[in-house]
Length: 268
Length: 257
Image 1 (tube, rainbow over the protein chains, first blue to last red):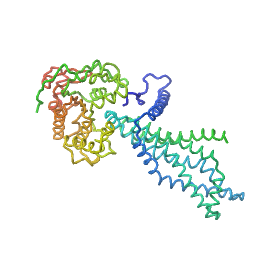
Image 2 (tube, each protein chain N blue to C red):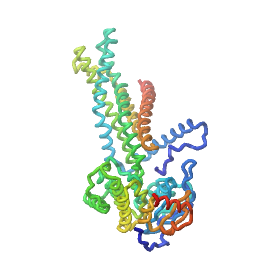
Image 3 (spheres, rainbow over the protein chains, first blue to last red):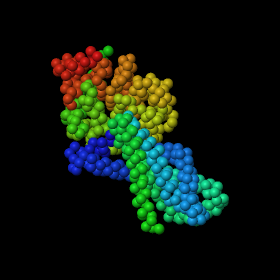
Image 4 (cartoon, one colour):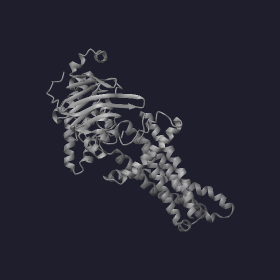
């Protein structure tokens, strides 16, 4: 264990409020210290460029098949589900506008972040957890390598950089799926569909989506690494770390979504 | 085979521990440990499981902080070092883990290169390859260079773990249960390797074990950790000539098993 940090698995022996509440506040304090340590170490050389690029490849490129399929299905299903309601009012010509707003503002960031939390977050939790319980992190430390910088900082940076890119990619694939669905029913041309899409979305939409997905990426990286890096109790702890990484990341993503939407709406 | 006794300079302690205490929650593991390890000796720390043997070497390497007491390694007080100083000290203190702790996503070559590349960034590929092949040759496993850790036997993993530590040319070697979980023949090979390392690299070593054969074959001096303190220290014969019941029962149990 790193001598600069306290062990989060050892809660105080005498409880201030109750065992559960004390350990909850202790956990929040320790997570705060973890994030603070990330910001302390991220700007200090040596920089782990090679490892960051490797992690970007793992997070970004390896998620592409899953993200592509999910994005495409989201676009098709959302369009198919929305058409009957609009058809009742004879407003199917508004489909591209409706779809673009829904996909760019909400669906693409949320779907991508949730998929990444499941795939990347659990992977980070399990990988770092298993390294922790098999003493591989200690082995790095005794060979004069800073494991936090090598393992944690590089992973958090990778998710923070790659999730916004994946969100943009998901939005494109989802819009393509939506176009195919619209085209097959309404005979709308490609240029007409996309000119209506781009007319509807504003700079604020693109900015808020990019900002939101950057926050989601950071959250997925921090939560995955935090649970993995602090896992204990052998193989059971590894499973728990992977599970907690996904559950906590998904919960935080929804909370952040609500907060960011409220802030962005205030600027509209 | 009992190890040949060699002359140890008792004025040159490379590790000096005074009044070391360490607890985990309510469990007090080390209760005022005093120890000196001299330049060039192999010190074996014997004791039952859970007596704090591994905790002791983790404190020496700075992986754990002591609750009380002084731990001086190569003239530096471990608990007072900043991160940079601790990193510099760790280059001189090698640690061989009980379960080898090889990076399982890397090949043997990458495992060995890892500490070298990260601590000597100016090294050329040719020099790195030379160092890797050199330490692999020293542990007798040149043929495994492109294998993954999962493809190695327990004994081979231990040897690669030792090689990864040796690549930084440490002055002190800490071995955590080097023969645990190995068959008797492999145990003998590991014991011989520990002695060869000491002769070739002129290291000072602490060997944590509960295996008396390992202690007999590798130790210049034995220290027996009982109830969180060193109950007795001396050569193998001196320790087990002791009338202390706990020492005798440890000896009898090991050899009757």
